[in-house]
Length: 400
Image (cartoon, rainbow, N blue to C red; front, side, top):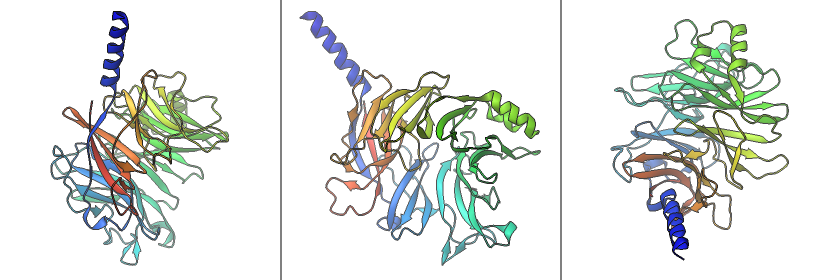
């Protein structure tokens, strides 16, 4: 009996240490953008001085990225200044879509590091293509920080899915300029060759570029031979310094690891654990509509199934806990209104649903401040809300 009690206490201590408890959940006050459309894809800037998110208009015709300054990153719930569009409605250049009747569509916000001049942010935004006399509209990469705003790319084919490196030196993005989706890297500091192509598959597309926390590695999804693969490039900076494309092609082959070799399934949206040891991604089993959550070690090995029937984020990858010991996901469960669940990397630890008191959750991101962990997400509303037509943004404070 004594042995049984000791074992039970050890188990309970382990579960208590591993799990999260929701201390409080608050809806963010977003001023004039509340109730005008569906909110999605919220991301917090490095350092917590701003939050960006997408707003899809009520008629479904306009998608724009907004940014709101956070008055004090240490205060909960966050107090936000009035949100403003990242791409201003006034003209940025002669080919911008900035007239009142012709607004630019923008999406995929990605923050860089905070500096004395404030946050830097990059989005994909539409404008009229200068090289074709302003007759064609396409997506280009738009970058802005205090005192500077510019389109990084100008090409008649779409450039999208921008991702700023954690040090702010590079932007990785997907481009259709070769006829397939390829990944390019733009360097702010290269004098010889600021734009570099780093994927060269002739019969496939590469999507979802995402940086490791130290900015050295880049993971992405490659659609090859009718299936998707999770691919990892080891030293992006070294590749960008190779000016010869033929030499760069050879270097890419030597540096790229296929972490899901032989898989027949569809994969999307990888994300690195904060400690850089793991990659998480969503997977669609071949011939099925559901999505599952997998992780794989960055050094290689067999991918591990963590949870079945999860709801992939609209654009973000899986949401790691700040301690890199698990992942927050949305369970695809209509009866329970898609609850948020914490999934440990340890398969012996039971999954834990978080009591956020919100419904139809999605698009999670997390950070840690002091002893608490904070979860930012979009949801259709709180359990007691009378009006649930529009998605709102919420922040939950979690303790362990």
